[in-house]
Image 1 (cartoon, rainbow, N blue to C red):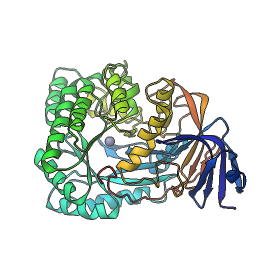
Image 2: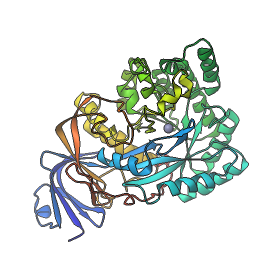
Image 3: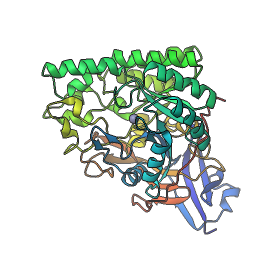
Image 4: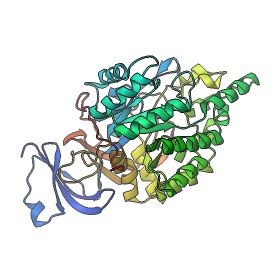
Length: 467
Ligand SMILES: [Zn+2]
């Protein structure tokens, strides 16, 4: 009884259903659901009862793409695992999957252990890891098998960033062939980085140095071309493919064509591509640097294709690619040379809210919101039904969400460790009120009651869409 919590009277929304139900939590898991005030739920007793009348009761968000403390461009992402996961909790996200990084010339094991150490004891919510492959060779291919068995079941490759994370087509093919055997899922940053670097050099030589040129040189066609090439390489290897941060209409079209052929090809987009555009990159006085990320923000016209892709399931997941850098001292490294602006945007706190706004605005349904933000990322990366739904036996990662609250996003009120908001002044209908992580209340009526170290490392099974 003392380890029981009862959530009464809310509208429980999952990817599959909506129902007015009472939810009984016991020992960190969901013990039972029953119709609100039914004879069954009326008998339930608990140490604490949360009144969710007129609220939504949602599975905690699963953000499958974050980069806490990522070293990049001579600096590091400004959110630590402690500050970033706390901000995630504030925004109704109860699981992140971050990226451990292999350094060139080093073992996967070394990179993974370094990321375990960074996160251990610091997280407010549960977390897992993908592995970034920066150096595909005989040794790292063998190590992939061991990592899959250990619960690191997805591997990110880059067709961009030559000299840093870049893999050539031969390395990509080898990694895909390996994943076809060991059950891993290849996640692809699909941009033609070799061609982009030529355009960067030419732009800088011609004095086009402002942040907006970051978007202009990273052309839509070079995203679409790389997406197409990644898909064909995956077909040759007989491997599934997950394309990260899809931003261009033409790239969505490549995914749609592949999926129409029945290929196991998946796509993710991010709130910044759905809500921001090249208009932001063009903001004067170097303000555009706040919006520099890769793939880049696109002209506003691309947004309709992304929303359509989310509705038609040509895109399946919305993650944040949270990778914050402060404007002062970090983004400023690129004054006079856009190629030196650290790539990344803060967003881990706002994904659930922005997507609720999309429900209010009519872009997606309420259940689709939960599907793309909770259930599908959990299934894609082997965490379902422990994460991503509200069902007996699932972890009690639960968000009490007030769909009628009004809020304004701002650097003055957010909890991410970064000195600006990419969504400054944006009004949102809906707000997270209370959050449970494995049954513990970590946000209580908009007060943080969690702690660093509550969150635990969560090993994953392989992609649940493939068997
Ligand atoms: Zn990323």
